[in-house]
Length: 532
Image (cartoon, rainbow, N blue to C red; front, top):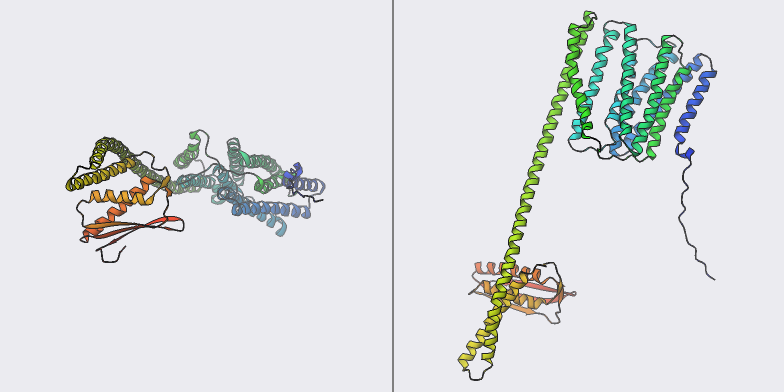
């Protein structure tokens, strides 16, 4: 008794909910652990070290994961993960400076602090990453134009920070105004990030929507925690490791879990399917940003109540910003002009191609009409030829003819048969199915081709001979195309021999490897060897 073993593929069981969301569960566990420590432990150097190092490690993990995504993921995703990695790296730099002050120097964070600038600007590349909309397919010069628009907006944020916050930080120190302006501008910046994330989540799909939604949730958690932390700082109740740091740890851990989980999601870039007005939002914002700089400069000249050094600094900042954004406007216009010229060249090429195609269609119509005309003419010629041939054959069959009359009748019959073969060839050319294939006798086809060529070259000093090998059968092909090919080759050979004062044209057909192969070899004279 024999048995048959059938191998079946092992179907993988669907992953459980815990397996699908394992990274988010891990982020929740880290946040919960940090919350327990912050609630149980009292204010101490150990708690400060634990808080600063934990925050730094989580930010470094987030920066590392997003950097790995920027290197390993497809090209379209890199435009998103690379700016996100830069944002987390700047955030980690601020956290490292914070930890250095509290752990190594045992000092409180100075106010104002240079690394506040790093903290402010870490949100800028994140806004750029989301506003770039990697979930929407982009191509051509439009990519560079959009990139310049984003650079204009990011440059405007830098200038806005320099215009509002810098004067109270480095020109004339004013800590209360610095804190108010910094906190307000930082809050506005985070709010803009949330708005961009919300709009992107509403207008995206699949894996990208999940990324935007998770980042929106973590951003809202961080924004709420920042507001509570600022109030604690104002009331002098904040210390590193306090419960006010829990939202920060939870938000960063949530973002890191999103970056890791996105590797398993379907991140597909799709065509822009919204109203075309949405495409103009970023250029309009860049235009408004450019136009706002002269207004800021005028405000600094006429309405700013600040001291003279502050107003002078703001005026120079506005002038520098106008120069920088003006350069971006020039580059953007240059790229748009290049793109327009490219479109014009493509339109020109398309027009030329269309015109060429139209000419080909007209030529085909002419050939079709000519074929119809030839077919009609051939049919009209065939009837009298048939009558001539029939009458000549009847006359030839009579015994009363003399030898001279018999030779003349034989010549009439031969020429009439030849003319009829030429008419038959014309009818074959006029057929409307050039791609049909059938069994074709190559030797007969060659003889007809030679007859047509001899008829086109009357009185030629070129002698044409045909040699057909033994056992040559029929081949599968298109008679019209083969006939046209033979005629063209024979005509080229006849032209070449006539230019050389005549000669002989030998046509040989033999079978080789199951195929019928014709050889057409011209020679300058009947005694000379053939030459190709």
